[in-house]
Amino acid sequence: MERIGFDDASRFIKENKSGLHALEDSYLTSRYFFKVFDEEDAEYLISLVEKVVNLCENARNCLGKS
Image (cartoon, rainbow, N blue to C red; front, side, top):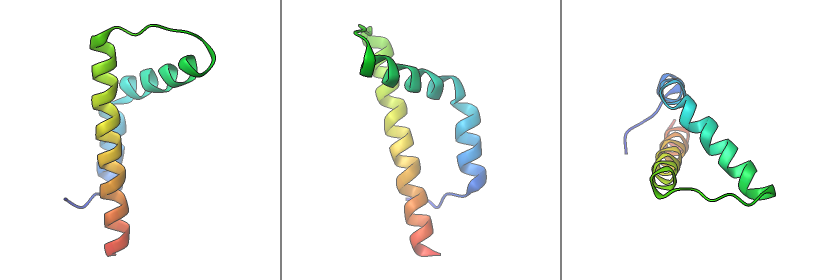
């Protein structure tokens, strides 16, 4: 895994801002309401979650090595 810095995290957030908002909305909506998601939206959000998890794992590894 490559090391990650603050700039990497900031860039990720800027590049994925609308997707992160959609992810947040989907989480809140699914907790309190019944909503059907189409397959394309679900696949996009799962892909985004995988990227977020990877970013967090890289950050954790970076902090552990410094």
